[in-house]
Amino acid sequence: MLLAAQSWQKSYTDSVKRRPLTFSVGDHVFLKVSPWKGVQRFGKKGKLAPRYIGPFEILERVAEVAYQLALPPALSNVHDVFHVSMLRRYILDPSHVLDYDTVPVQDDLSFEELPVRILDRKTQTLRNRAISMVKVQWQFH
Image 1 (cartoon, rainbow, N blue to C red):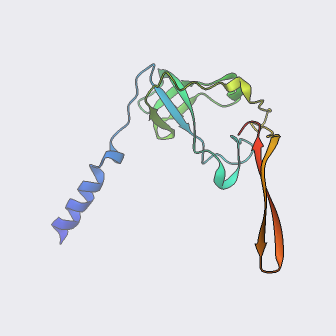
Image 2 (cartoon, one colour):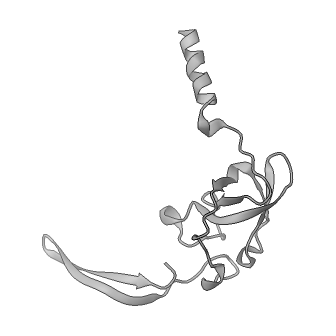
């Protein structure tokens, strides 16, 4: 039983998720933002908050497990050196172009979404109550 337990633990350690991540200068990565709480909001808050933002280019390898990223001006008040556990590899796709200037971000890294138009209306009936439902198209969503 001891040998079986050791082989299970070895298989967990040798899995793909436990391999050490290394990036080179010029690679593109996503930045993990889900554990950040408090003032730094990236879009929505709570359960619907994005887990990763980016992609960002790696400028420099600061240490064995730390990398400096090229962050846009909207994230200028966030430190630009991150641990390798906060990064996820991105395969560069020329058709994937992000424009950071279209969303007006305030100083606390939040932005206001404004409704553009109403797409659909319907009434949901629950026993003795009627609930009006509206489908809205948002500006920066």
